[in-house]
Length: 269
Image 1 (cartoon, rainbow, N blue to C red):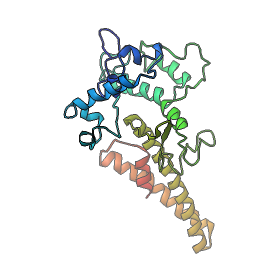
Image 2 (tube, helix red, strand yellow):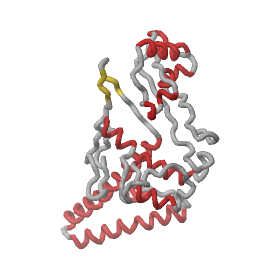
Image 3 (cartoon, rainbow, N blue to C red):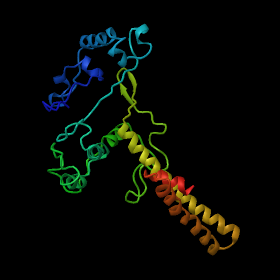
Image 4 (tube, helix red, strand yellow):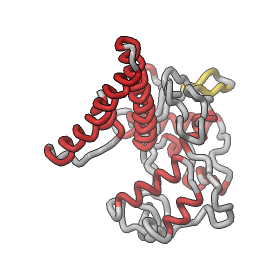
């Protein structure tokens, strides 16, 4: 975003700019409407003419020799900085948490509470102004997953969020998002650092459930071989109590202050 005008800057790494003007791409004007064959050829020729420059970013490896490309890509940079912040490094943690609310699914209760606290610098539009306090907007990732029918196991949260979507198997495993067109099947691939972080947290949370399951399996295994649930309980008490001892050494002796569920899983192992 241009801090002086408040307008979004040109997306240099979007191929659409070779086919549409900035006004034509504006959703307020109807977005990218169907263009003529001649306009499409002219845009493609403009990209091909710069095959060894910026145009090469949008072309496949065989494009120069074949005279056409069977692949293209975009790299869109969005929302930097958010309204009210000087730049992307101004109160970086707060901006990061705001971004997460928007792309993961805006919870109006958390957002409204944050406006008088952590997000007090934010001066942009309040999408929750006319919504109920517990209203939750569908996140960008959820929209993409629904569009391309990307489902994990379980396909949705269970037990009031205690078991997250994809806890047993990530929806991205084996996913093959496509769009059917009159000219054939278009394969789609998308990635963002924000999505990667959210998926990483989901995978780690799922691994935490497996560590809890391992404790139960070990308990039953000890009870079976000793023939005593009392002895099994004592042994499991010793094992579980080793976790806070291990964390004490990790945090206080080794002075490693980073913590996530990964640390707990490693300590439990």
